[in-house]
Image (cartoon, rainbow, N blue to C red; front, side, top):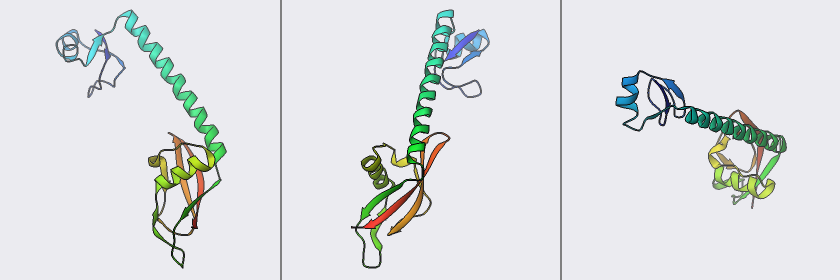
Length: 148
């Protein structure tokens, strides 16, 4: 019996996959628990259409991320923070502050979770950062911290 999984099932497959299972396992376990539905011609066609749509959406998102990477690669984003006499900051620069500065200066929205800083930014100066725009697409930038 062919089933379309509605949830991830351990040792069987992920949500949205078309799997071949025994009749008893499908009718007595998967379908009653809402883990799968019987695969009819219409549902298989619908599944393939969703898969095509998802791939097209992913491809478009990847292209947009590539364009953003080309735009941001090697640029310098400036962050102003209050600092003491010797350039030591009161606190440190967070990824949220970097994300806000990117939005303000380059009009690019990036989640603070997608910004990778190698070291804590606690002094005035320049620091390299990596921004993950899409899985496998990263832009390398520099954060210039200035005393304000």
